[in-house]
Image 1 (cartoon, one colour):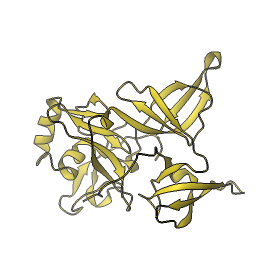
Image 2 (image 1 turned 180 degrees about the vertical axis):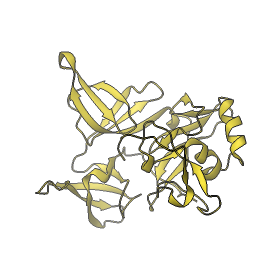
Image 3 (image 1 turned 45 degrees about the vertical axis):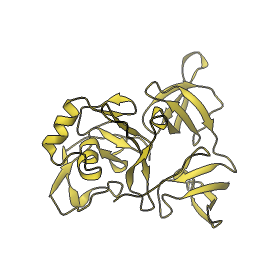
Image 4 (image 1 turned 90 degrees about the horizontal axis):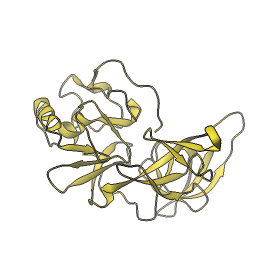
Amino acid sequence: MLMGKRGGKKHTKRIAAPQSVPLHDKKENTWMLKACPGPHLNEYCIPLGVLLKDTMGIAKTSREVKQILSGRLVLVDGRVRTEEKFPVGLMDTVSFQKGKKAYRLVVDYKGRLFPMEISAKDASKKLAKLVGKHTIKKGKVNITLHDGRNILADNNLKVGDSVMVSLPAAKIEDHFKREKGARCLVVEGKHAGSLVKLKDIIERAGGKPPEALVEDESGKEFVTVAGYLFVVDSSFSIEGEAA
């Protein structure tokens, strides 16, 4: 789930909604909101208005969605968001000015994003995957995270690693390497939603992407694309699935 260019039409047909968007009935209405340009690719995000109305059921109508957002009641990663087309993606936190409930977007076994309830303490931080790294002026290192953030960091971080960042400041609090023994979440492919232990990275010839040998929680081993792995901390868990 990487970054990229977004934009275009303001709506998309529900029947053509990406697999990552959980809709109770794609045939219920012809059109749905399309995410505006932002931190996540359209294929891997849910427009905030769709999340509030179709996924979470907090609003019953589009008008109610606009009222809630214009009231500055919704926070994504600790910042108020008022745009109904704002893209919300993997590991993002959603909380509310009124009420104690908070949620984190995770992926289920069908590759669908869904909001999992978390504590207020957990909502003050998030895991982010390192998807880019380059050196800037005076030898400083700039890293790019899967949610579009760019942060100055130590040179010991590598693409594929994950960091724990505070919200909303995005200060790095911890670092989790993509190495043998690492605990990972599979975020794409037929094993999406599986929590696994990384056993080995397998390099492929001919420009093919590297693969990973992993072991799931039942002890079963399988091979998946290394880029599908999102390194998580030891306490990370997933409860539930998209409705």
